[in-house]
Structure formats: C-alpha cells, structure tokens
Length: 131
Image (tube, rainbow, N blue to C red):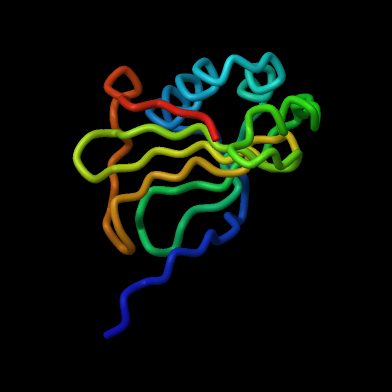
C-alpha cells in the first residue's frame, strides 16, 4: 500500500484556526516582527489541510500584504515573493509559516510524510529563524 503524499486539499468551507494553530502562527509572526503579518493574523482562515495527515494547513487572510521590499529583506535568497519563519517544535517536528506574495499561505507541521503531528506548544518552539 502506498503512503499518503503530502498535498494540501481544499476544504469545502474555510474554518477558523484551532487554538493551538493560532498560538503557533502568532508566535512565528511575532518573531518575524512585521506589522502586516500581525494584521493578517486577525483574519486568517484555514482553507486546506494536508492529505498525508501531517497537520499542515493552507491559510488565507484578508490582511494587508507585506511589501515586496520587506519580503526580499527577510528572504534567505533575496526573493521578493517568498520567505518563511521556521522553528523546531521538539523532537522531529518542524514548524514553518510560509509567506508568499506577502501573505501567510501555509502553516507547515511536519515530522515526515504521513506522520501525524499534534501542534506543539507555541511557547516551546526553539531555533526560530527567518529565511
């Protein structure tokens, strides 16, 4: 039997972030220190979930986008359309907030393909970095 492949699948209806998801997004946004991301958190909704069961969710927000110049400054390779805020959630769990075109697009919770991940505690994140 084949293992499930990581792929975000659109939800029939957007949903609110869970308390744990909201805390993780808020912590990563706080670390990034970008005002527009903070404003996006107020309206962020989950629009998709990962079919592999890893815990990653696709996001959409009506908040203002981060300006391209700020995105380029935060990007590890100077891209003006993408950066990520990453951390370790303990053990093998990676927590990554993906920002594309200035908007939050995904909260990735990953410990391997098909490995179910319970969102770690936001106050337990370590090794935070932006790139």
